[in-house]
Image 1 (cartoon, helix red, strand yellow):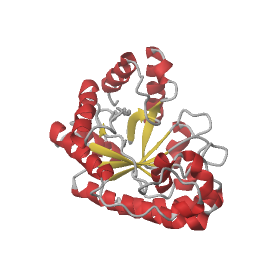
Image 2 (cartoon, one colour):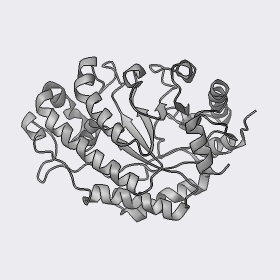
Image 3 (tube, helix red, strand yellow):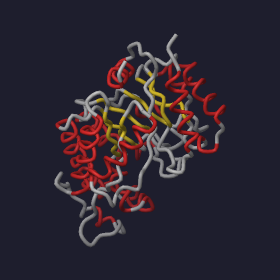
Image 4 (cartoon, helix red, strand yellow):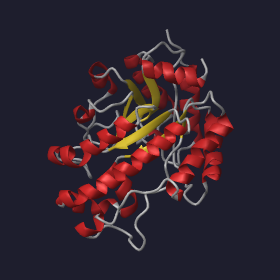
Length: 314
């Protein structure tokens, strides 16, 4: 199978020669334009021959002129819908188009984006989360603006032929998690906006990434998605074995991104074996539970790439 055939078969739960394999990391690219960032990504994809060309998102949702962070509830009202001409979005589209031009049609191109609260706080700083939680009514126009901006961006991705979107949301993170949400806050400040974006994204493969720890995956079980990703090795999260009977979606997991940088080759292979034993390598994408650290040593990446590609379905 080529990479495109393997990816779409895995997503659909159809037989594959082996599960698709993907690892991603940040390349410190915000100072680059989209084409330069595409070249950096493609070097990494080709070096390890990953099955998915998954781009990271280093360009941040802009803040209003003269505003560095959110200091008051009133500040949230200054954040408005953004044009797709803004460099944040234009550069990311150029990055994705550059990857496609460089790698061709047989390599699935996946973008990464974030829930509306993350869109804002990844620039304003996560220390401002409490202002949102304390002032939900004042936060809603800001979240609506961020949601509309992401929806506009999703339409651009579909027009540009992107295969999938890795949608990172912290909606499933409970209040025991740093930057997690109570059930009430989830229902009011996360769920409506996530659903609006994911409904709009139905033209591509929706890869729902439940980010962080202390996850209640039942919160997002009815979110529209084709692929489910989470940190399955985190002791506060469900395991792959626990989730396989609970979802018919393609599972994307198997590599412990928190420990893998310090793991031996046999330990990495053991984790891969466990994931494949549970899933049979079907309806499954072998991948980390979140972004790899850019300090990952070559032998770690080599082991994942080589061992993952050597596996064959029975």
